[in-house]
Amino acid sequence: MKALLDLDQLLAAGEISPEQHMRLRRHAAHETAALAYGLLAGLGVLAVAGATIAMLPVPATAVWAGAMVAGLGLILTFAAGARWRLVAVLWVVIGGLLGAGGLVLAGEGAPLAFLAAALLLALLGWLARSQLLVVLAVLALASALGARAGYWDASYLLGVDAPLLTVLSFALFALLAFVAHRRLPPPAAGLALSAARTAVLLVNLGFWVGSLFGDRLAVGGEEWSISPAAFAVAWALALLAAGLWAWRAGRRWLVSLCAVFGAIHFLTQWLERLGAAPGSVLLAGLLTLGFALALRALNADGRPKA
Image (tube, rainbow, N blue to C red; front, top):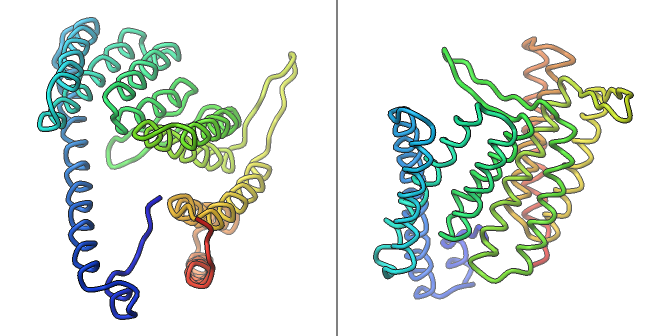
C-alpha cells in the first residue's frame, strides 16, 4: 500500500530522524523519476504502434509483425538480465499493440475482435509483467461492450452503448480482480490491482453516461427502461459506499477516485437540471469546494485502517 506523507512535517515533529528523512527523500525522487519516465515511454510506445499500424498495408501484416516483435521481447525478457528488461518490455508492448490493432482492423471493430485483442494484451501483460498492457486489455474488453472514445475538430467523445451492462460487468470484474490481488504473490498482485482499478474507472464512466441518457434492457422479449434518475441515485450510493470503505481500509487511490467522480456527478446533475447559468455554476462551485474541505478534514482527523 502506498501512502502520502509530508516528510518535512514528520522531521519537524520528530517522527523520523534526519537520516531517515534523507533516505526517504532519495527514494521519493527515484519513484517520481520512474513515474515521469513511464508516462513518456507509454506515450512514445502508443505513437510508434499507432503509426506502424497505419503504415502497414493489411491487418494480417500488423498481426504477424506484432507477434514477431512481442515474441522477441518475451525472449529477451526471460533470457537477458535486468539490464535489458526495460527494452524487452517495450518490445512486448509495441508488439502487443500492433497485434491487437491488427486483430481489431481484421475484424472491422466487431465485439469478438476486441475480445480477441483483450485476451492477447492480457496474456502478453501477464508474461511480461506489464501493467500498461493489462490496463489496455481491460479497456479493449470495454470496447467489446461498445465503450469508445474519440477526438475531432477540438471535440471529444466518450461513448458507452450499454451503461447498465458496463456497470454490472466491470463491477464484478473489479471485485474478482481485487480478490485475486489479495491472494496472488507479487508482481502478479500488482497486475491484478491495475486491472481492478481500470474496471472501477469504467464502472464510473458507465454510471456517468447512464445518469445522462438512461438505458434500455431487453429481457425475455420485453424491453425495460432504466431512467437517468435511477442511474444518478445508484451512482451516488455506490460512490458513498466505496468511498467510506476505501477510507476505512486506507485505500487512498479509491478515496481520490470517489472524490473526483463525486464532484463530476454533482456538477453534472446540478448543471443538467439547473442549466449553466452563472448563478448555478457559482453555487455548484462553492458547494464543490465545501465538499473538498470536508474531505480534507475527514482525512486529517480520521484514522484509516491499514
